[in-house]
Image (cartoon, rainbow, N blue to C red):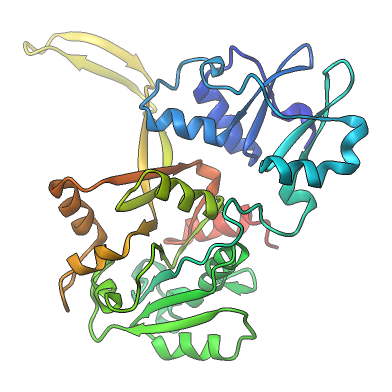
Length: 350
């Protein structure tokens, strides 16, 4: 990829910028005029705009950072220290004319994750008890958490992502083929601890959390066992804490285009308007959450109970439920065969 692939102008719409972020797989775009840097647009800028219910057809000039940090080309040798000091994942490199000549990315150059909170010590709960019927016949043989993505089971990839940010305390709620899951991790050389929470009967996407009500005392993550979120987990926790949310849902902005002309009619069946191939945007649930520990007290004992039931209950009670949007390229779902193939491709696994 060339640095020019990240160039946009001030007249680029936020929707176009979002699509370009998805297509490039990067979290930053450079706003330029005649190759000169005039601003940057990041996934965080778009996230904040989405949370304000902002119009995606506005120009990026509404939300871009007009005073971005940058590195002069003769300072590249100090890039790591500059990125760490400013706590940013990428920074453009400019010459003395303020023309963009390159960009440096933290993840491309340094092994450790850029952690906003030094080290995450939050527990992680992985919901791994389901039968994975959408992935049959594979799951007739292997439990869904052990389905390999490349040469590594999906649940191990999930754990590794959290471990990259310092998480060491994992709770895995198991049921279907639980002994196979335990056997796999018992043989693994690992630097984290897995606590197995066994469901006697299937309890849905949230019922098994009741079994943790006396074990978790701190803010914790919850993740389905068939998704990967390629976001900064420390930033998710930071956002959750700053907004004092009871639950934060990690969501993804999905754009859907109706491939036809859509007709709008009046009460008397007359055509009022015709929209050619309209686009609609929805925030969808990815299957990753941040919970406050008191939530566990509101989950019924030994009852089949879904997370959607819990969230709707809290909405009715007036509890603060927040969302942390990620872009489409940051959410990988393995729930069905096609999605599993997409995950392998997008992770660059051969």
